[in-house]
Image (cartoon, rainbow, N blue to C red; front, side, top):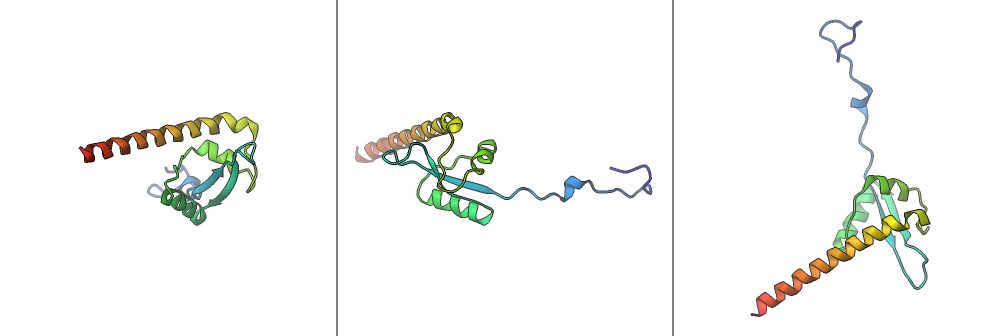
Length: 118
């Protein structure tokens, strides 16, 4: 982009060119039905800490769900804080998705075992 008061071949950079991307963020939820009324924040962090949270989740075969709008809301919560009621439905949908993935993976593993045994 050139500006009218600039020399012909000189352009000025826009402010957006100097913005760095926001740091990666991660949050881990846990739910203990015997003591919790709702899922609670177990860990959260930005940058390298977020990368460690995600790596630890993957190491333990915990599904990672990436939805920026939801992360923005959840990152406002404190550690050990339960999710607020207005997020119950959204979190329930994600938990259903995870259970479906688990079920599909179990079915795949069972089919794989049966194929190997025949």
